[in-house]
Length: 338
Image 1 (cartoon, rainbow, N blue to C red):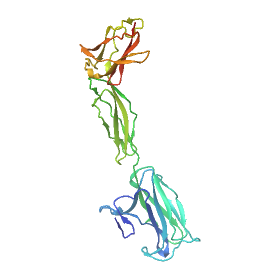
Image 2 (cartoon, rainbow, N blue to C red):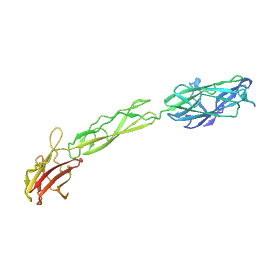
Image 3 (tube, rainbow, N blue to C red):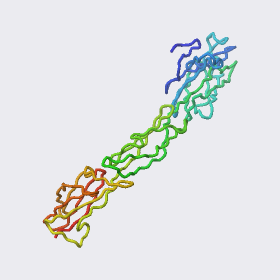
């Protein structure tokens, strides 16, 4: 970065957010006061002679950049001379001319001397990679030149893409490990770029474990703004209710100390069965009157069924038999002991 013969700075990009930009008003013929941009001087590549020297600054969308204006007397276009045309009796009025996409904190002000600085804040909610041209006009004594004050305000995209609504996906397990689940990739749209690519983790088609898994999807626009959305993939076992003598039959009493076979079946989607005992996370028999519980072990596989020869408690009352699965669900039934 170095100072140019115009008093500005050679740079490759726009000014950072909140940077103050000095805009100098210079005197022309007959010591007229005129406008000049001293700061954001950019040297462009050859092949662009119409914009070889262009003054510009950059602001993030919905943010503000401050440009400061003041007067300076000049004669013959380059040689500074003492004195200033602007006086309290002969002020120089300045008008900011900006496109509708740009908001200025003020669009008109005046100078009565060549020492006062007037800051103007510029902002925009509409990103632009080509920039918005901002001019000023000046009225007062003499020839008020304003061409040196023209600059471009580039507005960077600061808004992340937005996602369409997502929904929970459900699937039946195909094995004790879960199921490979395909889901539609959520769509995301950016106000500048339109539809943008979306990546998700775990990706569609992955093996999802039994229970609930959070899928996180990310979309990034060309300006580097990112957004995320999440949804759940829930994988369940297709298990039947527990089956046993006296299960959920209030009018049937079992003899204490007897053996009562309890069984259930887990179906695969599309046919077949899951008989892997690892799908059982725990099991118990609990007396309803006092909550005392005893773990159940010893589950076995017979054909396509999973069963357990449960020993009926000797104490009379109602008991709940519960089998908990690794997908977070359970199956249960109540028996009555006489």
